[in-house]
Image (spheres, rainbow, N blue to C red):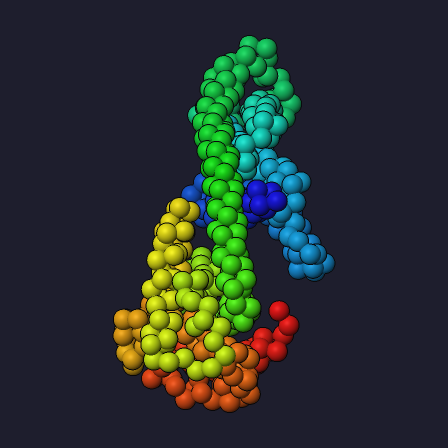
Length: 440
């Protein structure tokens, strides 16, 4: 579906580009008419005006189709995306070229190179190529002889044809002998056919080569996408299994990592729209931080059950041992996730695990980092982690009212938490409250 969407988008852009080209052709024709009015050109003024009027009518057909379909009827898709619309564009280009050929005598026949060039803007299609080239060749013959019989007289061409002879259709028919017919073909049709054919060949060869390169790029992109998806699935599988291991030892910790992931998701999705964070929090980085959140307490695997499941307050010695879970978490992540080869995710997961207990004022652990020395993923995780610790029931305490927990988070801005992240937290309080009471 992505490839189909890409091709439709490319064809839409080609149709739009060609609409502009048709408009420019019309403008140039109008300019030519103005030059003829002031006698820069020596063509019949009435014929020139009639030709330009036809040019405007032909060129308006695709534009009117777009306006009616997209603006008046308000269809759920643009007509520019329809596969048949390119044929309207190409047919219009041929009509405009034929129209101009009739006014500019033999010189104008070279304008038949325009329709194939317009057709070459689309993805390589042998039918478009064949129809455009064959159509150009046939119309070169038709317009060359048509110009001789009906077009503007050019005194420099086909001597000894006089101006008086050129004014009469009968005289022109009389002078179109087999010998002159062959002369016109050899001296005008054939050179023009070779010149236009050469341009057509180059244009469609470039289109074919470009289309082939795009096809190869799409194929490679699909392979890379499949590899990325497979790696992401493997990575998420590892995370889920690690979370299950934690939950098997301590059901409260297991539920905690699920809830904190929801809180981190809420914060990150709001922060990415902030001017301060939008450059760092691109879609990939947001996904990494959210997926790394469940690993923030992975180091508790190394903490004794006597400490982890103790129903009362920890002693200072026990708390020192509990603090080790941050460093142990970083070590475990590096040991396990290093094999996945995603260095950026590994770095984010490591930062989340090792720095989510650091404090903005530098009084946290394990390293006493302060302010922006603390990695941003760790600062985000700190808010989610503490909020859940306050509102959730633990073996050593009852849950705190949500509003009181919110007051504590806001009150600790600039001491425990990054004040800018707390400002984001204030904007999503309703989402936090909703997530806090949802069943897992």
